Every structure is written in C-alpha cells, then in structure tokens.
Length: 298
Length: 282
Image 1 (cartoon, rainbow over the protein chains, first blue to last red):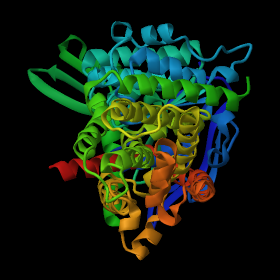
Image 2: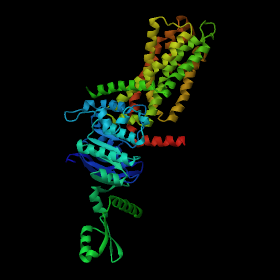
Image 3: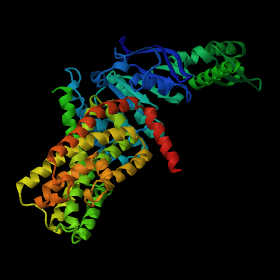
C-alpha cells in the first residue's frame, strides 16, 4: 500500500509547442507504492506529461521531481530506478524473449543493493509475465498481447522503484487484460513499486488505480479515488421502483436514505426496486462534457 | 563493477549476439553474401583482361580495390542500421536503459565490424584462387592488410554513425546512396585512378574509399604494380594521414550528433515516424 514518501511531485507543469499550449499548469503527486492513473480523452496531454516525467521530453515551465530528481537533468543511476513501457515498441524483433531480458538485465546489475537484487532473474521474469511457453521464441513472432507483456517485462527487469505505463492494454483481449491487471497489482503490492499509467479506459483506471487524475485539454479536471470522484462530481445514484403499477425513476444524492424513506411511506407497495450507483463512467462523461461546454462558452 | 565497464561488456556481448543472429537468418545471410558473390563474378570476368602494357590483369588490380571498397561500405551499413534502429525503437530502448546508449554503440561497432570481416572473407578467400599475380605468401602482406582494414573501419564506422543520425529516414538513406555510388565510381576501384582526369583524381583523394583501395593494393599486389598508382608510390604515410583525419572527424562528431539525436527520441517521435512510413506504403 502507499506510504508517505513522495515519489512523483509535479507542480504547475506547462508545455507549449510553438504557440500551442498543451499543458496549462498541472499539479499532482504520487506516493511510494501508489498506482496512479492519468485518465483522459485522446489529445488531453497524457503522453506529453508522461514523457516529461520519463525524461524523454523537455518541459516549457514548472517544477518536476521524480524520485527526488529533475528528470531533465537525470543521470544513468536515476535511469536505473525507473521503468518505462511505451505505447508500442517493435524493437529487437530478431532477438529471443529470454535472451533480450537477460541482456537488458545486465545493465542493472551494478545498481543492486542489499534490499533489492537487480536484475530480475530472466526465467522468473518470463514466468511472472506469463511468457514461459514463448521464452525461446523470436520476438517478432509474438502476438500483440504477448509483445506487450514482454514490453512490461523489459520495463521491470531492473526492479524499478517507479514504473511508467503508457496505454498499457491497448489491443489486449479480455483474458490478457485481466492477467495484466493482476501483474500490475502484484508489482504495487509486493514490491511497493509506484506506478503511473495513462489510459483512456475508465474501467481500467477504476480497477487498477488507487487514485485517478483526470486530464482534459491540458488541465487536471479531477483528482481522487474512484469512489471520491464518483461521489464528488456526478454524485447522484439512480433509483427505480414500481408503486401502484407505475414505474418511477429518480436521481438522488443519498440513495440509501431515499429508499428508507420510500419504504417508510409505502411499505410493501414498493416492488422492482433497483439502485444504480453513479459509476466512474457517468462521472467521467459528465466531467468531459462539462469541460467541453465551458470551452465552447469561453 | 562500475556501470561503464558493465555497459562496455554488455555491448560486446550484444554485438556478438547480433552477429550470430545475422548469420542464422535467411534475409541477413543473403545480405552478407550478395555483394561478395557479385564482386567475385565481376573479378572472374576481369581476370584475363590485361591492363595496358603493365602485365597485370584488371582482375588482379581490382580484387584488392574491391576489398577496400567493401570495407568503406561498412559506413553505409552502419548508417542504415542506425536509421532502422531509430525507426523501430531500438535506440529509444537503449536510452531507457542505464548506460544503454554506450552498450548499444559498442554492440553496433562489434557486429558491423564482425560482419564486415565475414563479408570480406567470403570475397577474398575464393578470390585469391581465382586471380593470379597476388602476393599472398608473405606475412607482410597480411599485416599491411590488417592495419589498413583496422584504420579503415575506424574511419568509416563513426562517420557512418553520423550519417545515420543525420539522414534519419529510410528515404534519406536512399538519397545518401547516390553520392556514395559516385564516390566509389571515381575512386579507382574497377579501373586505376590514374586513367581519370586529374581534377577527378583530386576529388577521389579526399574520400576514404580511394585510400582503403590503395592500402589494400599495397598489401596484396607485387611491388611492380605501383607503376599504375599516383606518383608511382603506395603512399602509406598519406594513407595513414587521410584515414586518421576521417577517423578523428568521425570520433569527434559522432558523440555530439548521436547525443543530439538520442535527446530527441521519445515514444511519440517513434510513433510519428511509423505513422509516416505507413502512409508512404499506402
């Protein structure tokens, strides 16, 4: 579970390409062992943000600290404690799965400590991402989902303290997606790896993340746990019931109390009761809609 | 072990793994064999064509020159591999790994140099049986060949890395081939450079291809063959001078250009390039 130590600290981060502002001053933090999802529609600025944090892109303004260091001036020691899984990688097609993991692991061997052995043993790593059957296969013969799991394996071969996952499950089938989610949860729980993932899939953010930061149009529009967001923003559950042969639908904030009152008033006469809690999806859609509406009136 | 040593060793191993891979798959084997075999065929047809009154066959003169040309072509190989690795994200992967760029470069140098030695052997070993009039019995000849080759690679590979970073796309690499073919054409590979107009000779002497060819001829041809060279001399001193100058230029430029290129690599830049190359195909 998340500890108090701040691993990611972003303050008023701004990015401008030419005359276009892509990030308008975003601020957030992540603590050790926390899984944080950057959620937002395409073009919201998720990838730009993550690339700045990875040290692959120079920001225009703002303060960024990743593992206590500014990634724009980070050295190779810092690099050894950060794992990166990008959106799509096609490299090393001629290499074999275990061969590549063993090779890339070597670079991390001199960064081992008494607490953390580095790198991850190739056989164990292959097993951890469920690729044992393909360990000696050429990488270019892997299916999309297998390739993605290999990318994750490469990202964690040095047992990073912080792992970046950019749209990690794009193109996964449901089974691969569930296995991947289990792997991410295991990393966060057992190794207290801090994980920052970007996604436009709400369901994924809800399942995986301890905390969700919603980004839209280069601004943070919400930040909190899935429950908090659902309550804080949409906040209204849907209650349906039948009374005296008539169907009713009502959106209420405190659904339990509302139902209690309903029964007190009508007793047994209430049938077909349904309560649907506001899902994150409702929250998200209402948020994005609101931001777009504001953008239109501005 | 310190991180730099670790990366150097990992790079060495990486080069050997890549070399093995290139010898165990059809497409790469074809690339290895294609030019040497083609050049063997050319040499075969030139073996009985005599060059003027010198008593040497054009084949005998061309064989060491072709050897030198192939060595210089390692520059192109290096450049193309770098472009390919940049397009598919291998370079970005190296950047995401601690000291990975160092390991990557060492690996590339080892695999390209190793591949070159293999390509040269495919050509040279049958070649010496095909052509008469070569000096192959003396240790001196092979020592000369070795230092010319080593210095030639030192000149060619860093420049290749620079070209690979500057001409970043497959299309750029295609354009690059034109001036390189022109350079080979005037470098006295298939016909002695002294048969060309003097101003062309001067241009040829700027580039490493001519000097690699000259060095190889000085190793494998008998002394009498020096008569067809500029100034009737093997000019070892000048060979060392020009090749060293290219090596220094490459070794100074390569880290600067490579670092600049690496700095600009990111996930979205790789994705963007793929998007563009897909559009080209469609």
